[in-house]
Image (cartoon, rainbow, N blue to C red; front, side):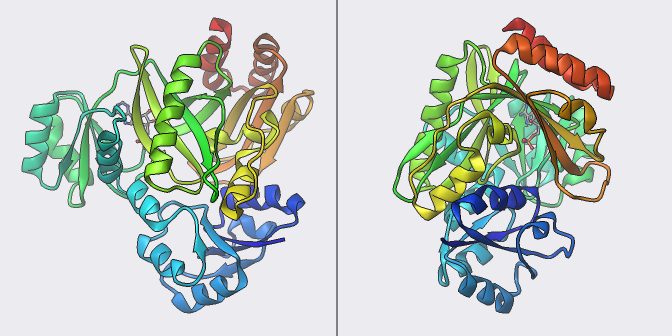
Length: 377
Ligand code: AMP
């Protein structure tokens, strides 16, 4: 039995605690918010990321620290390493926190990325847009997620408004990728160096937020092999321990890496029911140096994210392969409040389940591209 400390008390921490409990492990969560949803299943210490007195108490009560939130200040992670084991390590965390640093690393180790340039002034932005061409995507280097802190520039007229909207902080300009699809690979590396990966997952976003994920993908063998090589090279280079996600664009049959998430990831939620050992359980095993579990798909799975508010659970629960996750969070626009995973033995069966659920919940528009992908095999 070990006690695992988690910095951040959102749904990822909650699902980590729910996955680790059967193995006999205890959890302790640190968050600033009293209503952090992981606190419904694990004790909570309320503290700011710079409240080192409380963090010291935290470190004394745990065997290992990990993250539910990737934007914990790198200085806090670094400070913690003097008091307890911290996984992933602070350098890996700091690299993933900065879009420019992570893309530079991807390049250095031979992973294809969209063309990019650092932007620190409006003049830099003009120069970078001239060299990358339009359309291009301007993003904050730090603290961006779910499409926040981003704008698409379609021509020179967009430069000044984009700078006015998000300028003044370090930025990165990226070439716009006319991708055919977006995929992710969830991988895990243990303290012992053992490495495993889950099947490649296809993802759909709405308004920059993940809307649906589908896995495994028929006929994606070569792409999956490439994505896994990328993930493994990256994990070894960073001496990474724990689960991480690599988000990729598929364009003309090739992969370009968009970003890395140094934690369990929304596009891996389907692994709870869709594989023998979920991303959450494997993260717990990895940070404790225990043998990793089986990551092969045991069903075809679709994950639907509930953003803002929960729909009626009935149509999902009425399905034999329907699984419901309510994070216990207050509804709020743009907030991830839950998800459903639908599982079936074959893609055709999953399609029929998804059609029924989409119709019953009035979610036809969100589900249409997933249904089309299942139709296309
Ligand atoms: P990110 O926060 O970088 O994951 O971006 C959120 C979403 O914006 C991605 O999942 C893509 O759908 C889209 N996006 C981000 N960067 C690019 C890009 N360079 N080209 C095209 N679409 C992008």
